[in-house]
Image (cartoon, rainbow, N blue to C red; front, side, top):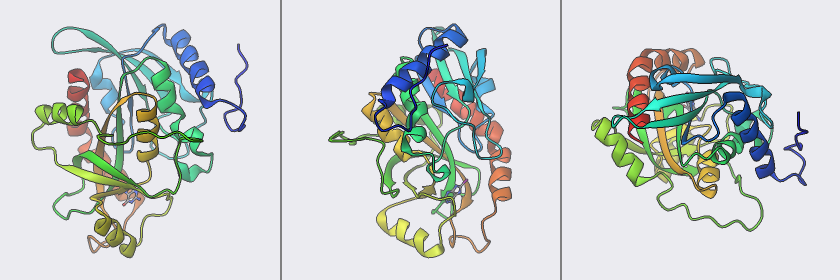
Length: 279
Ligand code: 8IG
């Protein structure tokens, strides 16, 4: 057992903790390197089974730098999955069944630790999924949407110091094209991340729409920034689980969110598996 440097200590290099986490994953799974990683957000939990054979499953909180999930309905396991691609070649996918949200107050390093760990395992591509609110009235709950770009409204960054990273094409055009070949009906939208944990007011949703947002949520943008910095190619997939506040007449409920996720589960799980097999 190696000692893990404390992620929250400013003098700790977060990439060293990610290295330790990747080493733990390699030892626990027996897979020396992973090719891609997926983060499963609200509604996307069922996808892992369809990806391929589960090589190993580890409790996420046992991996250096990870904490226990705070949101009910999130699965706290990290799986290594053997993905057989359409051409018969094999890829190993690291599937993170939960994420740390900014609203948990554990700091932005925790929020992006999974992404940095994925990069340290060797992953080249990252699929970030989430459940979110939709601003387009015709995107009914259960609609999957490709993230084309984002608005980071959290007033923070996962990058520290003078780390200038280009975010043009952050959500890879190549991977979006690939996803659309799997499902040509997939719409695209701009995702705005609010800090949460409360949902927006109708005025805030109107503001987000004026700024160019189609989707509102509480995750993903900080992870995408950290992923780009770590050299990963990013694909973002949102599941609209509710119309954003004020877009529909009914108030938001967490139950509604969970139910929309469950109803859309089979379709979006198959979609995600097919995309992962094409990446
Ligand atoms: I699921 O309407 C889900 N997550 N900010 N707004 C925000 N986050 C969300 C929403 C929503 N629905």
